[in-house]
Amino acid sequence: MDFNVKHGTLETIKSGCLVVAISEGAPLEGPAAELDHACSGQISAAIKQGDITGKSGQTLMLFGLPGISAQRILLVGRGKDAELGDRQFRKLVQKVIITLKDGGATDALLTLAELPVSGRDLYARTRLMLETIRENLYQFDQFKTLKASKPRLKKCLIWSADKADAGQLKLAAEHAEAISDGIDLTRTLGNLPGNVCTPTYLANQAKALGKTYKELDVEILDEKDMKALGMGALLSVSAGSAEPAKLIRMSYQGAKAKDQPHVLVGKGITFDTGGISIKPSPNMDEMKYDMCGAATVFGVLRAVVALKLPINLVCLVASAENMPSGTATKPGDIVTSMSGQTIEILNTDAEGRLVLCDTLTYAERFKPASVVDIATLTGACIVALGSNTSAVMGNNEALVQQLLSAGKQADDRAWELPLFEEYQEQLDSPFADMGNIGGPKAGSITAGCFLSRYAKAYPWAHLDIAGTAWTSGGKDKGATGRPVPLLMQYLLNQIQ
Image (cartoon, rainbow, N blue to C red; front, side):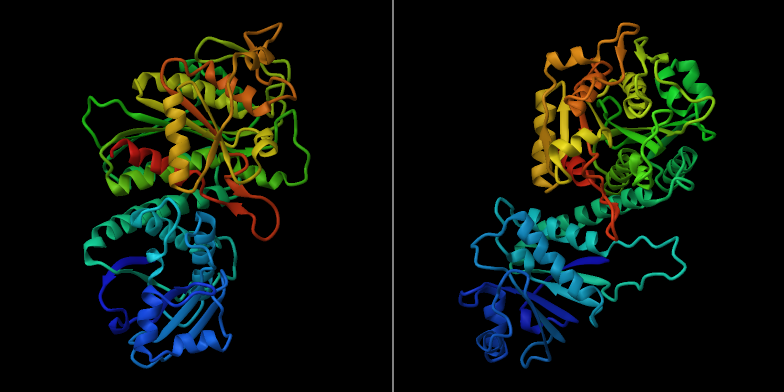
């Protein structure tokens, strides 16, 4: 999808379809009023006849209106509210793109960026609009013999009422395109089946990115490298699998060499059976999504490199497959992490924190400005926050607040959970420095407490995306690409 900016008198601009919003129960204004005047009142006549009322989400396609160069006009209702909320705005844009993508027009001119959206300036609402468009054009059909038809819509023009706004619109389009490309990569990696997307596959994807973008330096650590580093926690997860674990480092230098890097750490469990503590079989197919933290890191990195952001970024992906076998780690086993701390494995299905803790220790060598780990870590997070909001925890309140703010800006929201010292006691073990679970209470928080013990050397935050990384069950099952928008906004905020 090509995004471009167009300035000019609306009725004179040629396009396959011109999209205009109208309000419910209110006189026409703005672009709708201008076009109604140009076509001698045919838009207001359609409203008067009841063909459309302006109710939120209503649409009406009009063809060949006199005095207007566009082949079609798509009217879309925006409701009665003076300002739209993010959710209302996205639903409106979604309705428009679903109407257009399989219609007759190959290009569309959108005036929706002119709509007032609460708390959003022209740049922010334009970017939100374009990311919503791309989200609804995504297709994943590479394993289907009968492919989905490609959308006829190929180009979207964003109308600029004031030529002076063109710079903001172009920046929004540039950012939206790069972020959406990153989201698409994240969704595709997440949607791949576990027999394709293995730790080795992710390592090869990292190498391919390194060849595509010369700004990247890529290093793959295999199991013998991890053993030499003392990563007993990470290796305990892959012990039962024929697929070898990989620790992937992808480094991007967009700032001065002396500038401290931001570090992203992604959980990359390419399939999670639960190991010896095996999961129940219903919906176990969705455990291919247990690498969505890793997929997020790939998507963010791709967007950062495409935009050539002036920051230094280190991306670490801890990837393994968690399987039961005669060589698998057993409940009651004790392993030694890279930090030297010992862990009693009370549940082999609490494996994400085991691959992450060694990677968080490894991150110390980069002397980071911040470290954010991203993981589909706990089912308890879904119980607490559902599927709309990611959880954030951390040891640095400024960093946590930056992530929360970025989530609001990107409409990819998170909510802070506490890491009070009292929760740490739930990890006590009579046989090792800690257990890898803290019992049935506050499971997301005790998982964060576990990780916090390995992240004392730098500002650190943890994003639990178990509820937000994918949509579960039914025909709409699939990866969402979250929290790529949140993390990209966080990184963009570092340079502004």
